[in-house]
Amino acid sequence: MRSGFWTLTGREFSAAWIKGVVCLAIALATAISIPLLFDWLAGASLPGLPATAERALAAQVADYHLYLWANWYGKNLLQFMLVFALIFGAPALAGEAASGSMGFTLSLPFARRQVLGAKFLAGAIWLAMIALISTLALPLTSDLVGKPVSLALLLRGLPGTLAGAFLAYAIAMALSAVTNDMVKAGVVAAGILVLLAVPGLIPGGSPYSFLTYMAAAGPLVPPSWVWWGTLAVSLAIMPVYLLARWLFLRRDY
Amino acid sequence: MSREVEVAAPPAVELKGLRKVYRHRGRQSEAVAGVDLTVPAGSVMGLLGPNGAGKTTTLKMLLGLVHASAGEARVFGYRTGPDGVGIRQRVGYVPENPVLYPSLSGKALASFCRPLYPRWDGEAFRRCAAALKLPLDIPAGKLSRGQRAALALALALAPRPDLLVLDEPTAGFDPYARREFLSLILDMVASTGCTVLLSSHDVDEVQRVADQVAIMAGGRIRLVKPADELRASEKRVRVAFQAQPPPQVLEDPVIRRVEREGNRYVFTVSGDTAAFLEKVAVVPHFVLEMLDLSLEEIFFEYTRPAPGGDLHA
Figure 1 (cartoon, helix red, strand yellow):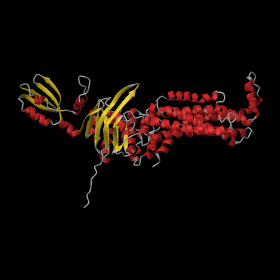
Figure 2 (tube, chains in turn orange, purple):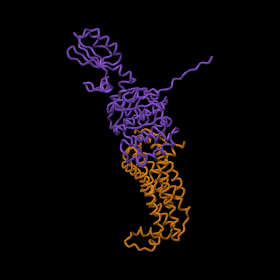
Figure 3 (tube, chains in turn cyan, yellow):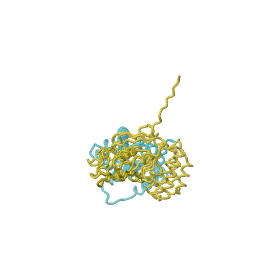
Figure 4 (tube, helix red, strand yellow):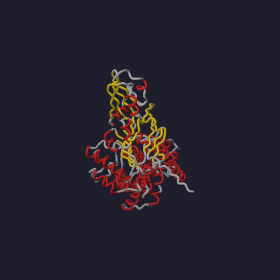
């Protein structure tokens, strides 16, 4: 007899395929466009651009690695992964509760811990796949346009991004355990993420913001902070997950 | 000298003081107010009750879908709860309005459920689906309510459960499907000896399949009896006395309700009805007759609100 946990994880994974494929397509299209746009940006004259933006652009086009890093980890992947984490996390439990199929799931021989674990794992796999596949598109496209880059260097940013995304996902899932309204769960989770990002807006506070580590922003924090910070964000996932479990175990369906 | 000690098998279901209080915005409402119920293994228990009696909440507590505020529920001697995987492998459940995974067809749902049960019987699933004329290739979300209930039943029967919990299962069925549904349950009971706990407000349905009847109202069990005993113990005695009857007749503990017009009385009695009839017969009377109550009349008797709004105890 196959373990119920893996059976349910497989179902949860396949149930999210439309969502997963759409999110992947968006991230992938963006990742592919970044190397393709480099030459155009490098040669473009953009009249009316503020002086600071012009200086930032000049610095980026002077170093292709920095350009990739800034436009992928620094801007796009970070935002995508936060939104995707909410898209996957908020309906995870609330959606099934609202549709009524949670009663069916929980009447099958699954422990609630397994149900939560399977749902979390399935969504986490999708998020990891989206981040990894779209990030892999950067060096592949760079090769195609004749600007080879180090794959290892690019992948170094992923742990921080994924840690932040999983934290956001766990927060959304915890909120999803207390309501049948997935929109409400997503909006409240987004509000909590905004609060968690506030330290990054205070001068000198960026090491205390999880977004810093999601952006894999080596230039903003000392190198040692990047790994300690990523570890701290990763460790924060566990209590949030346990909170989600505690809430889910106590819920009536 | 060796002595064999026989250990009695635990009942299929045992509910003790089961209570559920819902709290919402500072308000409390008691859905189930201390239910004690034992369902012997191998029996078919019909749980009758009007809407809002607490039947669904009781069954959900039994399955661990709803947490009990007090008391305990046991299935085959094991305490149930949200993590009772072993128990749920032995229990099939058809809820009142089954919502299955809408994108999965009957076949896909069977493939999903198969690895979860050690005794999955694919042939039983197909037989049940065929008997209920269930299309297995259509996504569950596109099935009618009755078809979804039929699919839920096929999925509940396929693991060859020791206990089948059915909560108003035939609500969306036409009379033909209802008949087929009940036949399937009876066949299942006859071939496997599984226990059935059938919640319904349809008296005919319960009468047809149940060998034990429990009546629930206002969150409490009002009556539990074997179906055959029920007929013998619940009667109506109509009598026209020649004069005012003695108090020992009017105060007999078997009397549940008295309707009176002059010296004509109609007693609704529960218990040793023969002894009551003998007691009444010695009092001078013009007319005396004892009438059987249908299950429907018994149901109304136990669930009718008292003049003050409360239920008759």
